[in-house]
Image (cartoon, rainbow, N blue to C red; front, side, top):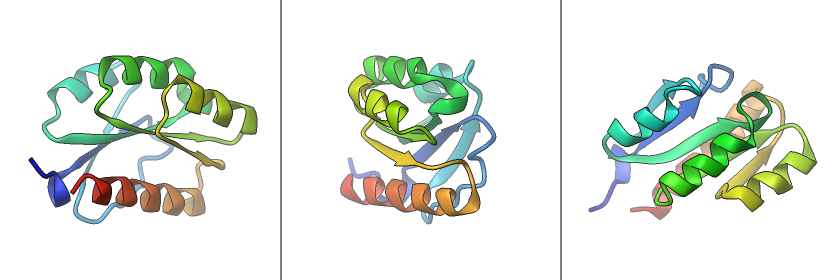
Length: 117
């Protein structure tokens, strides 16, 4: 199965909710509902987590429960970036949630979705 333009992106929390990824449906969820949302969302491909807001445990748990998902961790702390990779993040974007960081995250997510084609 190719996900292509039908891939879905889950965003945990509201600080990164302004993401625009061409050809992908972006679903915003809360930390408390991310596991159910990841399970029930058809064609979920990528999950974006602000580890400064949501914590590294979310990345770790998602990696354990859903190893097929690509996990993008966003953090403003370089130490958290290394920790996020260690617990299962596919890639890490270093920066605070701003429009420019969102543009970088969108580019990273687009590349991950393209890789799945």
